[in-house]
Image (spheres, rainbow, N blue to C red):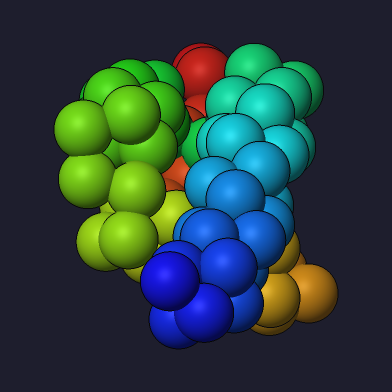
Length: 78
């Protein structure tokens, strides 16, 4: 019983942290105008289906670098 009392608050904290990160990532995806739409849709759906995979991918493509790579941006309109 002691193990449950120690682990349960940690599990709750992780759940709330994941929910908060999902809100942050979805808001960032919606506001990210120069990004390619298809990639944003895939990562937004992936945030709900596979958050442990989609969130780090989105972070390393759009949040961490100062300028996202050219392949991850929408093509210029002529």
